[in-house]
Image 1: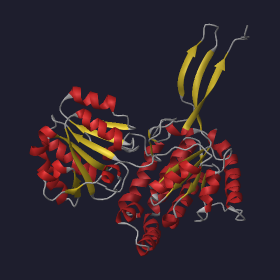
Image 2: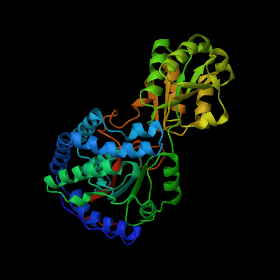
Image 3: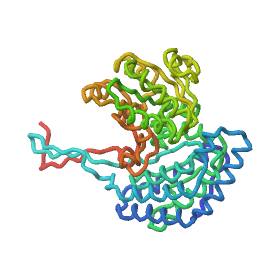
Length: 426
């Protein structure tokens, strides 16, 4: 692997060096044949599988360090690599490599009466800075999505995952080099200095987009300090609403999965809303299934009356992304009450309705303004891989450029190509 020297005189100088190398490399990558980019991803997948044991061993150092620092169980879960998760990273690379080329896609085309032929064509964004915390797999997903869409990636992983993320970035670089593409298209910040985050956020005119992936404090800092455009979600306060016309078995299975499959991901359900007409019949059994799975419940007064093991929810509970085995529960009078609650307390991430009434489902879909709105499905499907995007860098909950899973196609901009026949403007 090519070694690169860095300027450690200051965070600003270091970031500037990385950007300079990335800008040169990205020009080559952005114009490279799709087969070369695909080859880089497939080689990286091969390398990850070949180094699976070494990845897990390296990761154990990060996990041990995090455990010594009394990090939460949810954080440790996100940090930990095992054979299944290593294989998922490799398979994710292969899924991304199977996508159509995101660059050069003709997004629209039309002809003007004067004979001008105008096309809108997808182009890379340029240099993307990804700032993330505990998930080492973000290193691979982010690098791969940037690579396939012709963008250079500057990665700043969390100090808790430094060893694992650095190793994974190195394997991605080897994949690039095997395909004859510049190594500087994937660069890991070679320091855990927190001041480097500030330097990245201040790099207006150098870094084209910043994508934060982490907890509320990180995302709030990025949104507050960035002088660079940002794709971000602040948090995932996701809701499941059980309607009066819901099938009981379906509702129970969806809720348990939405909350308990993996509690530490942003698509995990944090609040259950249930229609008054079915609460007496359904909620006690649903609550038992959740508590049997290890979930603690915090409910409004009506819910607590129906489930004596439930503790009283506070106002703060409705606004909390637990990322843990805790679920808030509220009984509502109608679908519109559920929609109003989501509008007041939701974070614009993912909401799901469980109902057998098609009209109610369409009403919910039309009036809930979140990035992802579902019918009869677990919120844990809020994931770019599950959407057929191969992988994602994150779920964007803003309304500009990208919204929902940010995959390869969302990491492109566009330009207009105009073809004339000697046209002049009168």
